[in-house]
Length: 512
Image: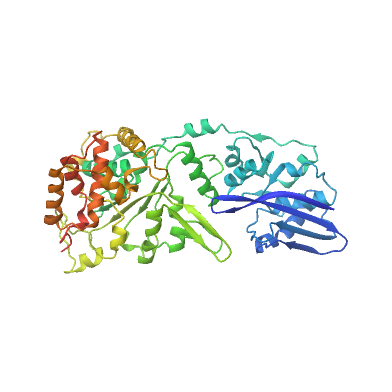
């Protein structure tokens, strides 16, 4: 007898329907075909044990399991459950009439318990698109699948529950999630707040500008000045995720297996802070079985690289293209996957190995030329993609001891949202352009027009401060964002002057 059950394989952040065909005939061997990897091949041992524990029998006949389409490699253990149900139906132990209505996915333990899977959300979206009635999956993943409208999601804990459902002896309980309610429940619910930071008003201002225009930023300062503390609070002043961004972000974390059982939808912007020993593949994604890297897990949020010069040069260089394209393509001999990677890069670094170059009180003990050598670990092309260079100085004791309450994140966020609304209106006819940092040089010339006085100021600044040519467009982009924060139609002199101030590392002799 031939029976078909249905599951899915995840490629990138999208899913593809897989048909699990089970045929039982005379003989006594098991065959698994359709390009299965070792985890899939081993499933027959898990399936046999789980079926026996559930009180049913594993047929002692020739069983052929085909995973179609057969030219796509099938990976992982999530095909255990549909294979088990297929074998039971093909051997006549459960009815097969309703199997075509459901996607079934889950890993089986030897005792019949069902373990969680990765990528439940993109699989649920695929099931809904293909017109399936429902999705039977592990209870730990059911909230991810339940946010897809028009699809019935059943969370199960054991193989026996699924068998009872198809035998109509015990119904499964549908899990329902109100997507809008779930989205609004935790939106803006952040653990950190800018009001925790004493002093550092100029740094807060720089981060406000960065958030308003989506600009990448690097913080340069001595140890203990508050660089990490400030970076952690940057997501709290970014505009809240919209529903589309929340679904997109949730899909990536679902594929990576980073969602907890309590999460149905990610409603706050991600913040990723990898250690400086991270490998190239872990940062941008890939591997033998491609998975999203840190830059994709930071999609629609913030990627914080602490102690930037300590990262391996190759790790930093592979980030250059994703910073421009806002996506990363992982190519293999038989296939290629693409992960979104639109994130804000926030980096921090000490100004020198000892950490006290340019310190107002402590003396730098680094030998001559060491500071420049330290800074040169960051390549020009990477630095070219960072719009704001901000010097962070230690907080004075009087500010630390002050009882004056600092401005809350929600007030800063309100100003950022207003500036983003101006940019949304400005780039309304551009599909892939949403904020100032994404502007091309041609667009900069069109949008960031300055007066003769502004041109003179910029020329003087570039000559006197020794600013590089690459700093020109960056200054204009940041000046446009500052003007947007001021609700100003034109880029004025004061906007340019403030923007010029954020190009520390472009100055000749900064580390000389």
